[in-house]
Length: 164
Image (tube, rainbow, N blue to C red):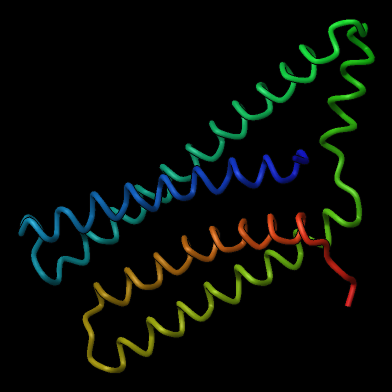
């Protein structure tokens, strides 16, 4: 498995953990009756907290991933000197044109999904649903868009991608 695929899986795991924790916490509090029906302050605060948690989790997971990658390469190449190991680590993390193209196409898919979720949330508001529903649809569409972006990236790394 390539470096980019492993990095994408690491990001997806972090995103899925944050999404699951948000759903468990926020909807658990709502279903238990601890939150009033239209309490926008709770929902906005919870979303902001989970955005912060997501950033911290992503940073920590990427640091741990890169440390583990460097250790794995060093263990695999014990017979080599330190300079050669550093060269191999650097060669592993370099992105080429295909990586950039895959990132571009994957990002496009993720942004389209987030945009559709945003428009869907606005439509729900026009149809008379509460602003709480609109906020959650928007927030969840951004989180799911990020996960789908990662899945698309893995798909393109496995199948390949064309310039067209």
